[in-house]
Image (cartoon, rainbow, N blue to C red; front, side):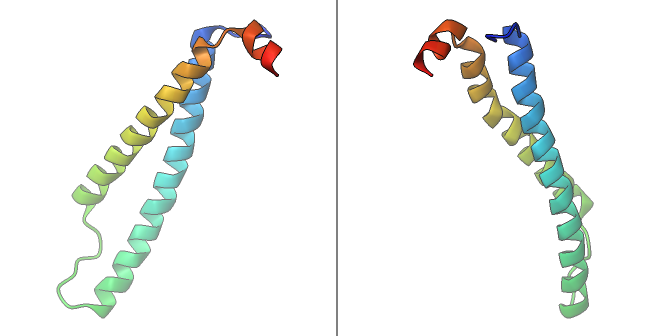
Length: 89
């Protein structure tokens, strides 16, 4: 903000970074869940390989939680006065 970024730009930047990290983690988790499900299917009787409804619901919930958890720090960063922050540094 001290170099000319607006409050909305700072808010959007932090939210996009949080969402990107959550999306990458979700994709890696889905790949891991697929392989663990295949391994459990081969070792245990009556266990399915991949429950897409449950996995999709949990992934969506975790993505929503990650974005909402990054909103509070983003809002705080967007509300800081640039001159005050520069003086304390």
